[in-house]
Length: 114
Image (cartoon, rainbow, N blue to C red; front, side, top):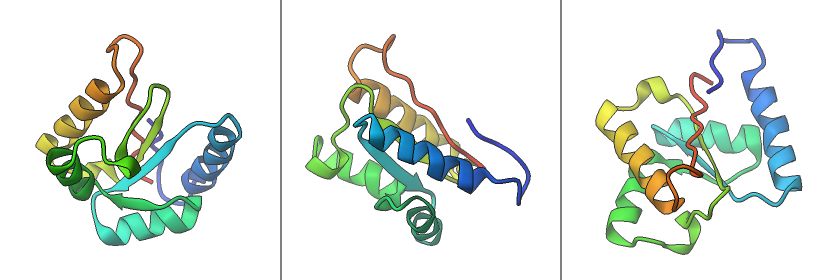
């Protein structure tokens, strides 16, 4: 979780983290609560980004679709988590933990309030 007031460098920090995760070969999924926030997240990180709603919908209708398939060790960035409904955040967390396999090894890190 990365939380801090506006203008303190969260976006810059996440961009550097993305570079490090890419260097180590990690799969990175970028999500946000709205299309506008997803577009801003994509611009900041250089990653394709989607809405949480689209991710949850696609995983319900097409489980394991290639773009959303997560392997163990994948990184899920969720921007602006304070804008998400509690039920959506819970469903996302549950989905990521189930996809990751062993719950003890699967960790969902939520980057919020960016």
